[in-house]
Amino acid sequence: MLIDYQKVNIVQDGNIVLKDVDFQVNEGDFVYIIGKVGAGKSSLLKTIYCELDHSNPEKAEVLGRDVNTIRRKDIPALRREMGVIFQDFQLLPDRSVQKNLDFVLRATGWSKRKDRKDRINTVLEAVGMADKSEKMPHELSGGEQQHIAIARALLNKPKIIIADEPTGNLDFETAKHIVGLLKQISKDGTAVVMSTHNIQLLDVFPGTVFRCKDGEVKDVTHEYRQMDLSEDAQD
Image 1: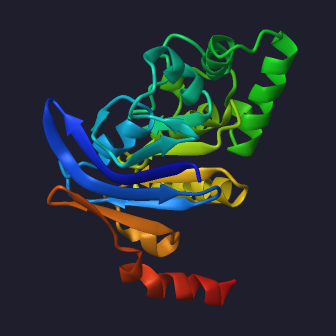
Image 2 (image 1 turned 90 degrees about the horizontal axis):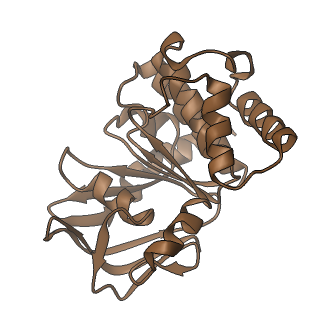
Image 3 (image 1 turned 180 degrees about the vertical axis):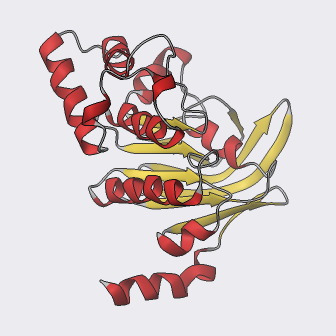
């Protein structure tokens, strides 16, 4: 199991945002986190990569680590095993796509230039952006920048991708393409956990669904069961 939360309280600014959270993710899972703005979606995701704290959990494990007691010096090693995608892309504006990705690889211990170049080519090809390597971020559309952000998340062959509203700034057709790419990544074995306010996407790409509401997180996948059945019928 990649993520195992049992009776976890999630704390922000000294206040409990979500209480008694039970949340599990396995290899290859495709998981949505839904809920209104301020319901705690981003807070839940931030605990996974240790940007927010937990309070008195029965169990809080991510990739085999107890993230309730993890030492600060051990957090970078944990984060190298996951990819994180943000709504606002967070590409470095003063360097090309190639150099953005190379910066990440050098920062995470890839010392050989040829290995870095090969890996960059591989991930850009995987997201359909092989011809954009020399472009600057401002020369790309929002959808293209998000494709590059996904490529960046794939660089270190993560076991899990955390995506916080990755389609929030995109039109629906572009959003659909982005989520389709993430869905394919999950089919290849990398778990994807994605927060979204775009409920239409759940119909197009069914997955496990958790809802943040009234300080709680509930598995509401059964509400979308018919969608799962309709997808199975198409396979």
